[in-house]
Image (cartoon, rainbow, N blue to C red; front, side):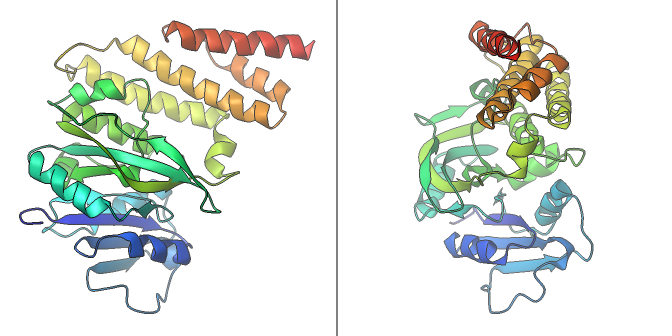
Length: 308
């Protein structure tokens, strides 16, 4: 790829077969760096290829510490890096799509490609994909995702020097807000390109820990941490160049969307009393969009009626 060297940093833990499948989907020209948490895959039998480096962590470290450890393994020759989970996949079109985007926008800091979903049975469905090719000056890409992050990590390519400058995953997070925080920070602090090409698949497990915890106080606490960090950046002058984002509206829309996701999951499991208690433990986000607030109010009304 000429002056561009692509690396893929993969955190893994006890998922050898999925990891091998991911590695098999990565273009041969790209380098691969794997951080094996708690040495769960020792020994890795068979050759993984000349461009695959595996480092075994001797102890169990927190999830996002392992993500950062994978990034720390990437060598100095790499100019750009993907950070998928060990159960994700790249599609055959990834190599060509990435090469073309880099040739067209060689100075951009973050590239957002499309990414579809698939489950543990390899059933696939449509995920997020940008509608058109768009390039944004520093900060303006944030306006695409200020209400929430739709892209997924197998579809996101970072300039490595830019990622080093802004910092990667905040290890205070325990669940999944760390990736949303990173993506929003990157879009706010750097130039970006949205490419209308699906290049990967993001796996969603039915009954996963993420969904089990989505309607919990810990989840909402991490949403608050995430939005507080972005709000601090916005308040310090790191606003999009084309228009300012209302900080309270930003915070409340993210909170409202996560409340709705939690309520949906609880109600789907038939836990209506728990859903009402969850909603009433948390403040009503009054600065969220009107249609979002109306959805929450409708949930609250229906749940209260059902509890009588």
